[in-house]
Amino acid sequence: MIGISKLYCGTVEPSDALRYGRESGRMPSHLLQFSADKRPVLVWNITKQCNLKCVHCYAQAKDVAMENELTTLQGKAMLDDLSQFGVPVILFSGGEPLVRKDLPELAAYAVKKGMRAVISTNGTLITRETAETLKKIGLSYVGISLDGMEQINDHFRGVSGAYKKAIAGIKNCQEAGIKVGLRFTINKFNVNEINGIFDLLEDMEIPRACFYHLVYAGRGSGMVKEDLSHEDSRKAVDLIIDRTRLLHDKGKPKEVLTVDNHADGPYLYLRMLKEKSDRAGQVLELLQMNEGNSSGRGIGCVSWDGEVYADQFWRHHSFGNILKNPFSKIWTEPDDPLLKQLKEKKKHVKGRCATCRWLDICGGNFRVRAEAVTGDVWAPDPACYLTDQEIS
Image (cartoon, rainbow, N blue to C red; front, side, top):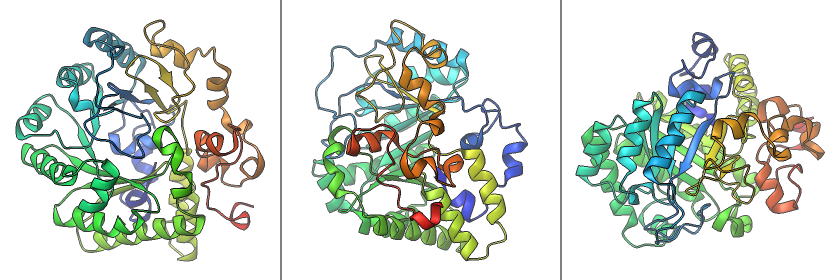
């Protein structure tokens, strides 16, 4: 996760993170990526069921309930363990998390236990009543997925009318006083929609947007050829940087992040050097604090059935199940060799990653994407668009 607005527009300084001792338990959510202890942000896919049919769904969700979902009591027992372990944020995801009737109860319990609760949703089920309920339980943030304007979004979501319902969900969250943001997954078919997303941020006064690079997992595993070329990735990131700056200079600053390709960090820093920015040194310091990809260390995932993964995309390799061992034990006393390696992955990456000058900043990027293309977990990430000259 690379905070474009934080870094390029100077909304965060290294001193902001140092003020909290870089302890995740003390840091506000917008600074968590700079924590030193990397207590994991936990993605809980509480259900596989979803009312949409997204072509790039990593969970391969279907509109049918699964019999092996964790019960409410089992979920609360897990939340007890996560709270004691010091997990700062729990992200309720799916499938579509709002199809589970006990989501408000589970989210309220997480908040009661001292964790920040957020949800990742397609937004189509957020009625006014639902938004008011989410506000009352103390939900910190609602991230709503849009993959473009109406025609493109509904194509990717597989359901006509999904865009209009998501926009209504955004408005309902705003009226209820809940912080809401957009989530956008970049690929060849919607890259030209990035400008439209920024227009939406401005027109609807939406404070936050996350632009996700495509990860080849779940139904998205068949979209390798639909990913951007390296040159087009650079152009897309430049556009995101430029539009973020434009809004900032207009007095309408937004929190803008790119996610799932940590080449964005060095690329932003190199751009700032070319522009002779006097903040380039501070940005490098913040990128060093960020440490790049943190799958298996600073981020983890629990599935609807209790299986534990390195992140939400890595569903073919479980490290254990919370019904047999608590998450805290699985995470800190790993029996699985891969989990041990992921906690020190800079020792194991191969090829250009192993000799890259930005390894401490990028963290080796996405191992699951490398495995999807090459069959080797430790091969270079094929989505890294930095040139050999830039990394040497």
